[in-house]
Length: 285
Image (cartoon, rainbow, N blue to C red):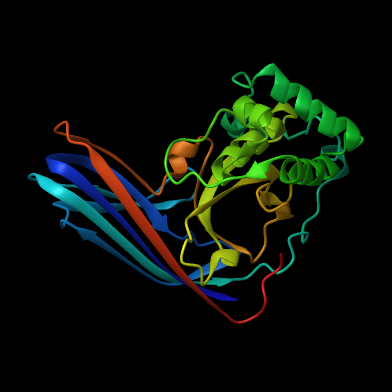
């Protein structure tokens, strides 16, 4: 399966502003599940400086800085990716990690601490997680599949182009949310069960050919011997060759496609567009 994407993001300001340094996370990552064949990034106005970096979650990002006022910022990303994972179940989990709360070796437990903390999670979400776990007989893999299906079938998926994700208890109470809202709910429920979970941003192949395509969000959980594995509560499925992953982080801010501030007090307007084409084998869904 080959995926070609052109993603344009345009910011317009009511009067000229000074752009602070920006992180641009639009380059698909290179892993055993996807191979980046081509990538091009265009930024206007042209940055004064640019450096490439590999962050703590394996995200390939550009750090750019500017000089002088501007009334706009335009970013265009173009890439082609080959998707390599046809089977989302191609992993093995040791017996000691099949019960909840999930067990990790000491070295992994320390390394994954930021992805497992649940001190911020409200009690209704904790109760929700325990309910799903009980229905799954406290089996870790059954819990992940049940949680994906529970969120998919009991919440209404809406589109919110702007704004941060809602807190997980708000999404649970409203029984609706955008893909990023449902992802935060999924991650928090996993963390209650001791499962390391992180927020992922990227693209879903099901949006190919649509005029209203946007970036998508889903979750990844860390399973011993299997590594990071994707679950999409917005679509009710395990992730294989149906998604193109770009950025990931314990917090959604670390997976934002473009992150930066400006000074000058002007108001801003955002317009984004994604064009996607597929070629090759049929995707799993």
